Length: 207
Image (cartoon, rainbow, N blue to C red; front, top):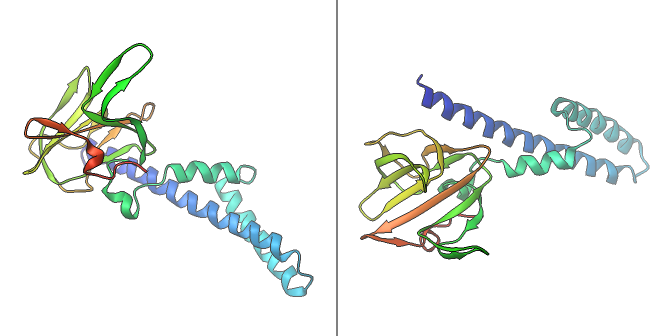
């Protein structure tokens, strides 16, 4: 197993663990709610249910070590969930950080030929199929991967580590790289016939 495959598996395992953590915490929250409701019922059945629920809840919470921070743990885990359902078609799960086109700050203005997404997940997925025609590093994009198909060219920037190499064919949804865990910003550009296109006009890229 090569280093790139190991890195990809490690990120996948981390995101899978976060998903399991979120599901465990959700289950514990449901048990808490059920106990609160059931305690208002004065019956032998309710007492037995409370005892069983308390035992199960204690075991789950002890295992996850989130007894005193269940709400905080749930919120954190949800933010780090891996791609599910419709999210599989997105490069990352995140929110718009810098828009396409003219961006102005207090000190300057510049034209953004793509968009920047503040990601909640470290892994980056291809949003279309295509062939890796270039990858490298420069001052503006940092690490980048260029994927081309018959219709367009896509540039993925701010890549900390690439999991593909030049000449590779990728499918939609393939993990092609990873962002820097300390600065999870993804830059995406779409080019067609020598002109940039607003990526959000073609793809649903943010949550």
